Image 1 (cartoon, rainbow, N blue to C red):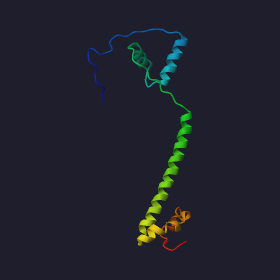
Image 2 (cartoon, helix red, strand yellow; image 1 turned 135 degrees about the vertical axis):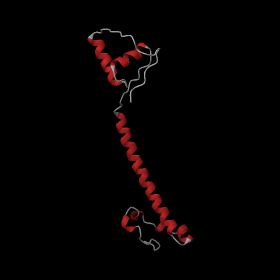
Image 3 (cartoon, rainbow, N blue to C red; image 1 turned 90 degrees about the vertical axis):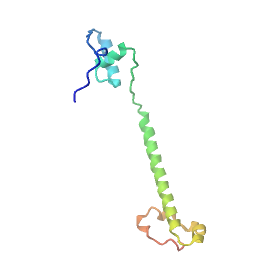
Image 4 (cartoon, one colour; image 1 turned 135 degrees about the horizontal axis):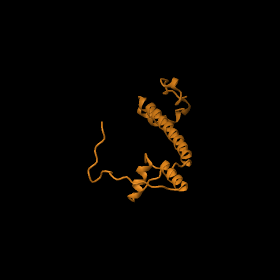
Length: 125
């Protein structure tokens, strides 16, 4: 699909050439690498039009924070799984008084064991 043609007033008809010294060129190349612009021309046009140039930076300390957040998320998920297992256990009990009074007989060590899912917890452990 071809690109849309620019309106007559917005068309870039005139070419301007300029020269810069090596120091200025290097600073422009460095700036280009940090922005979203695809070409030097695009970036220089925005500079000439006094548009703000957005510089993208990457904070390496962000990685440490993300690792901590991932660890917290995994712990919260494990806690949620445990709560769901306890709730399922109590809702699976037939006797209402058993649900209210026998909460101390649940052994948390059995909650993570997938082989014990069908185990009868109605008897004290």
